Length: 319
Ligand code: ATP
Ligand code: MG
Image 1 (cartoon, rainbow, N blue to C red):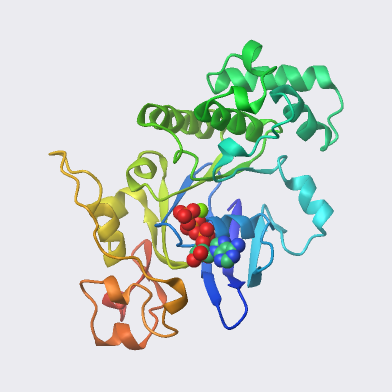
Image 2: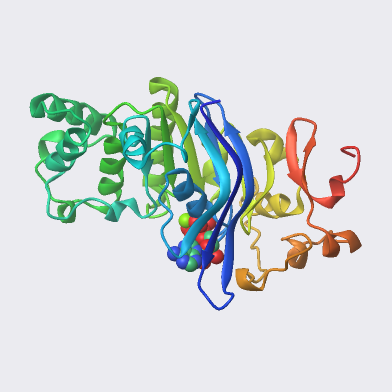
C-alpha cells in the first residue's frame, strides 16, 4: 500500500451546535500504481477527505481523529516542515477549481521554477527544460505557454498546466480533486486519456475525486463511494458498475446513460447535512430499500466477498 487512511473523522464547527460531520470514520488503502476513484455527490466530503490527507484543513474545520500513512510515514505525526518537503515531491495535488490556482502575477515559467526552488532545485535551466517536457506531455506548446500569464490561458489550458506542475518533482502519488468538472466534453476526454498516460506510462498512483461516475468508471481500477461523509461501498470498478451492492451506489450507477442513450434523472432532494440523524443509516431518507433496522442503527462497513459495503441488507454473515 502506498497510502493508508484509518478511521478519519473531520468536522466543521460553526458554533451554536452547528457541527457538520464532513468525513465519518473513513478508512481505505491505495495500492501502488492504481487509480482509485472517490465518487460522491456535492457535499459528500470528498474535498474534505483530500484536504485532510494533505494536512490542509483550516478552522472551522478540524481533524478529530484518524491516521494517514504514506509509504510507511505517519503523515499527521511528522513536523509540518517535513510534511511540506513531501508535498510536490512525493505527494502532489491538483486542487478543485485548479484552473484558478495559478499565481496570477507570475508567468507560467516562474511558477514552475518557484515550486522547484522551494524544494531545493536551484538550477533554473534544468527546471525549465523539465517544464518544457511536461507541457508537451499535456499537449501544450511550451514555446507559447511558458511566457504566458494565467489570464492569457483558457480554463482547459490552465488545468493542463496544473497537471504538468503536479508532475514536476516526480511524485509517487497525485491527488486530483474534480479535475474535469470545469472542462467541456472534448477536453474531459483528453484529460482522461492524459491521466491514463500518467498512470500507466509514468507509473504514478492516482486518487481521482469526482461526482461523475461515467468519467471515473473509464479510468479507475477501484471505486470508493461516499455519501454524507461515510464510505458506502468500496470495490473494483467493474464489480461496482455491474453489480452495485449499496442502494446508493445503485442510484449512482443508474445515472450512467444506458446503451440506448437514455439518461435517468435522479430527482431526489438533497438533505441538509446539519439535519442528518445521529443514528440510523445516512442514506435512510432516500433509500428505496430501507427497513426498520436502518432507522435505528448506523450500518457498519462489512466485507462482502472482495468488496466493502455499509448497508444493513448485507447484515449477518456477509449474507
Ligand atoms: P463538491 O462535490 O461540491 O466539491 P465535496 O464532496 O467536496 O463537494 P466538501 O467540500 O468536502 O464536499 O464538503 C463536505 C461538507 O462539509 C459539506 O456539508 C460542506 O458544506 C461542509 N464544508 C466544507 N467546507 C466547509 C467550511 N470551510 N466550513 C463549513 N462547512 C464546510
Ligand atoms: Mg469538493
